[in-house]
Structures are given as C-alpha cells and as structure tokens.
Length: 95
Image 1 (cartoon, one colour):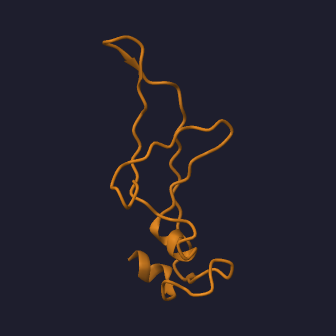
Image 2 (cartoon, helix red, strand yellow):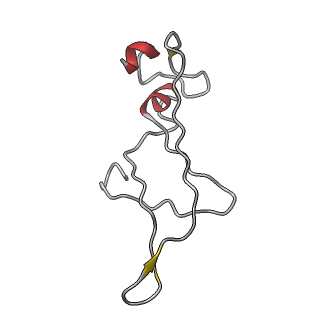
C-alpha cells in the first residue's frame, strides 16, 4: 500500500525476479532503507470473455524468520549516519 495515498499498488511480475515483503523488524534494522508496508496477496484474474475470468499460473511461497532472541537490532553500519530507532533486543521487540 502506498503510505501517502492508501491505495494498494500492484506488484506486476517482472520475468526473472521475485517480490519480497519486508517486515517491521528488518525495516528497523536497515534504518528504513528497506521499508515495511501494509501488503496483501490477491490472485490476479484475467478476463477471457465478458462473463468469465481465469487466474494465471503463479507461485507464491511464504517464508518467515526472526533473528535469535539475544540478537541486538540496531542500525546497520551502511544504512545511514543517524539511527532512526534506538537499539533493541529481538526478544524484547517481538514479545
């Protein structure tokens, strides 16, 4: 979703690429270089007649991971001079 307009923007497939939705923790770690946005997954439909649609073949794989609970999440060295967020322990952030 575009944070300014509130409108969902289609992630039009580009051959040979993948789309990755970044979560809040990675956005914080990267000092917002990688941004977390509200997103949704909707199967695209293609009209084949005035009354029928088909859904083209596609693959969607969900993968979720978190750092170890004792990991300190702080601005990575190559992600800006000033940290936007104070350092925080993963366990504290998640729990």
